[in-house]
Image (cartoon, rainbow, N blue to C red; front, side, top):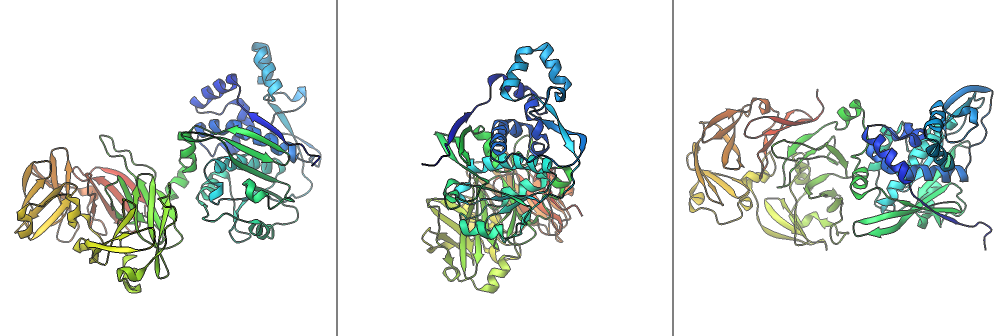
Length: 579
């Protein structure tokens, strides 16, 4: 039996400390017991910093026990930061005041190691190596394990700062020497987006070590499965779920060397937001540059979401919208898929994409996996798509995807196709004729939106446009009839020469969206009059209308997308570069 004895500790925050921390967080500042990690936690919102606080403190204790920092070299040089241990003469004045006013609380903090001391600083006479963190981002390290890795990065960021060295992060499986660098506000979003589809193995760790220099201090953040293959790797921190409830994992077991501890996970709501990056703080410069470009915007499903192509065909910019009396759009997020995106849709909390890979189309999901989780790629020949047709599709807005009864549906080459998990495709009928046009697929020309038997007059019409549960048609291009499935007809007169690009409804109000002959002026034509939507006019391409909500999007200039109200023209959202 090994001489090392594993100690299992359950870490909980004292009730008094929790109440103090909650008050501090509500005031927009960190509680005193998290002050040593203030630099790293400043990259997170106060709510997430508070929720991760117990985990950060305990992991820091594990790291200090396993790898205590060596004594600093050089002559004393004043003080540099705060510490949780020290001599009485290094205790902060505020702590002495606490001893006078609240002696019991002072004693509790002393016994819990929560008192704050000035940390002595010394002149460094030698250059130190980097603190290199090798991180497992495979499927086995998802969810609760990533929250532990986030807390560990905050701890190791402070360790690197105290050592006077640089923190660099390497993703296992990436080419050796490909490091994520910078301060945590820049580094954490890149780490979060670096999800890998395959779990790393011992060979990938060995390859990563080839890029390390002799003075570097290497840490490995992974799961027990990989750690078992690397018994000689000293600084290996592992995590795995340790407790469950109906809502998911509630506790996590963290191991470093001979010591293991069980930690309580943050509440599910903030944990999910953290794993999506919504609890990361960004500077104004970062927010402005978070989306470099949003090209070819499209509403390609009934969901309240806008999709646009990013800087390449492999990037999508997705913005969730919350329509209502007060429009509250979410933050645009850029997703990289590693291959050209042919079709995509935001369905609930899933982002589903159909990628072009050689002569096949592959299904990729961000979020909750589909059932089954693995879909067989589909050969392009099922759809009669040659390489030239595929390249043309990639120059247009992404095509829509629907998911129902375990099958995906996509409009390709003028037909709707259903795709099964087995990699088989079936022709299910014609799709909107506009699919072959310059604008790509157009929901306003798709009869499936109406969802019922069309009026007989539609068959004799020259032009027809659709919205969810509504249809409009004309025989002369000017006088239009509108029929809603729930009841209620309307008649509208469209100016001569204008092109009708969409039908919108809001409560009892119906309107046709029109573009002028040159596509410069966008107008909303309603029974009570016509309004020119000046703020949404003059774009570089034809605006797109949401099939079920009163929303319209336009590309004002290359890489810049505007989203506004289709009835009033009010701008709700601006995405992409400003010049």
